Image (cartoon, rainbow, N blue to C red):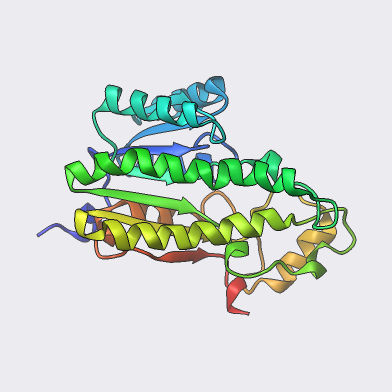
Length: 263
């Protein structure tokens, strides 16, 4: 019987993290998987950024590789799938962390159908297509873990009072796609569970990113733990859902929110 620490190990696993070199969640997720022993592939629009980040992981003794893809470009997703399978032979863990951020701008009054279609083009169509491409590989090997990074705003609406005194705006497109991601994850969990593939979500709370002081004060006052999420907070959740430690866990939306959604 494996020890509990062995069950958290990702040694020998191949993991792909979209936007895995990014400063918001992505790099922390990639680092956590690498530290747990996985071969980590990061991919986003900037090949240079992914190669530089993977080089830093290799310098720390990990196995990491940088690739390029665009979540809003179907051909790019198909090419990423081909590149990963041709080079590594399989994929064990898929973390969908990429977001079409330029599609999430403005409040409801200032948005239009074009903005909504731009957001959906990456965050709905892109998520669907990348899962569709890698799922047959996971089914064939009889094992796989898909982890989709949603948000507290996929579960509850934003609190407008925390933005008072700032020019910050929470675009409704963001809430829309993050809520859809959670339900899509549950669909995958139900449909592919008997074929050895698990699908789960992580919904993080607000990430500290040098926001204006009024926002920081109001957010930290409201959240039960009294602070915003930082780079270390998401690591354990990702490794748990990627590893055999969560072998009987699927369809879960794991809140990493400091208690925000308890209120």
